[in-house]
Length: 54
Image 1 (spheres, rainbow, N blue to C red):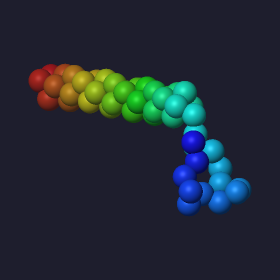
Image 2 (cartoon, rainbow, N blue to C red):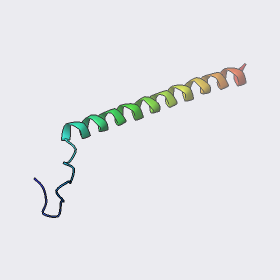
Image 3 (cartoon, rainbow, N blue to C red):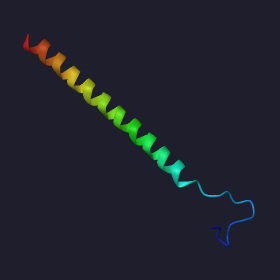
């Protein structure tokens, strides 16, 4: 439904499916980045412990 304030050339709202799809993709990307950061942190920690501990 359009509001009375919308002009004749007002774009229709983005479909819910498109919004959910984009949000899901962003969440998946963020989770992947966080998992990579955690893995690198663990790897660097292990490497540092091995170098310091001898």
